Length: 166
Image (tube, rainbow, N blue to C red; front, side, top):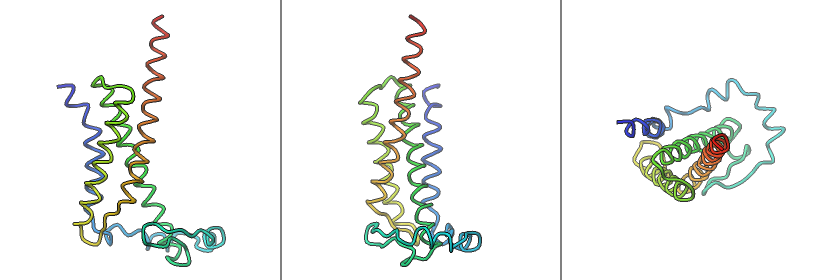
């Protein structure tokens, strides 16, 4: 029974990601809030030179305006953080199931990227949302960072317990 419960954090994070991907964009739009509470002049002064392509879309204040520009970074940070957490907990669960080292990292990353891919596919069928392969790469990077942190913590704790027993 214990082995079933260790999957609960993975299921919770995956569920939160799924639910947020199910919500149409207009119900998640942060731009009115940002427009009302953010000092736009500050961002224009300091970030008006930031300009890059994300997929086929130009990301810049000149092209999007301050609220949409900030919302882009908030959304991408949400991708990174969500998949960092997913990679982290996947790695810990697989470690508890006695899968350690590079096999753990590879399987954790594979599962996280597989879920990210299915999530982007899911968004393609959600009203006013779209799926992007570039987001899968971003999600995979977040998961890889979470996996590395989890492995570092698990190995540090394991090394400390071995040294303590000696």
